[in-house]
Length: 355
Image 1: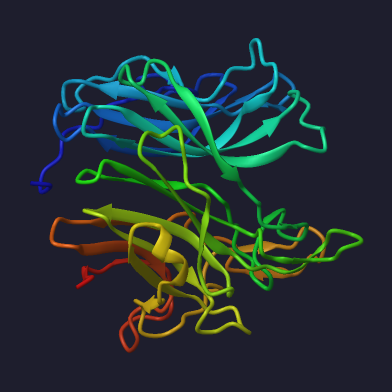
Image 2 (image 1 turned 180 degrees about the vertical axis):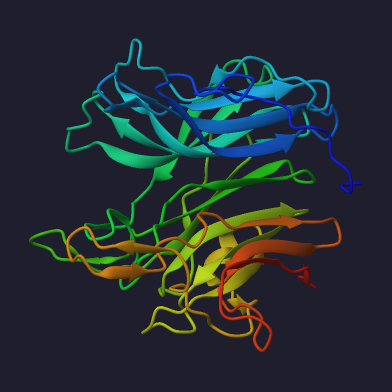
């Protein structure tokens, strides 16, 4: 029931031995996510496997997955989800991040992630681009086919922070997808956030103002995806999540809609029947007041040398939906508890009935 837990089970071990002693490694395992087959109990753990060259430069960052058939007591050797460097002839590369797995009613495993799509491994062609990708496995995570859902427009790089950020913000941002599965209608929904509608200088390409949106697509088989639907207010929606049940779809994300000229954030959701109606869905505010993300985590600007507040707010939010059509979003809030604690970062969740 979640009150008592076993000792942790090691899924992947790099850079340390079983006794906890450091060992040489060029592997860094990151961005771990888990799902389970509700019928068989098979558990899948997916993650990004960053691998460096001996000189410290990046070699690749494929998505990996490991499975358990005994309810998490032991895990299989890892299998690579994204394509390999070996024999690469163009297309989806192993330069990937941000995996998110789901299992269908028939046991099919789906894993969404962001990747670079390039003509060569140098990724220097003018047609090279980032994309949201969904990999499908019909043999329990041993082999995968890949489908490019749509181009993924990254947020602009902020040289002072050294990462992508929103206009006027310091926290790092990404465009990693989240995936959900509707078991009643046997349908997948994927959401990611990108800056395709941002304002850029026509001559220099420099970002003038970000305009993050939730981008949503759906599929009945993981291979064929609908044209992307933009869900948002035009006021920077980021770190989106999606949940679906019996044709009802909900998308949640941070938003600057309630403070479009400032830096404050709220958390909100949109709902509809199917993906087509999401574009015109009304925003529903979850948080009761906007809060300032520049509360914790400080860095020094790489160019300005100034102290930068709020360089990290937690890179993800998430949401689930029950058969009662109640959503359970989870996000980072920055208000603290007014009158009890100073502003700080806390993880919040709330059960919200859609009807």
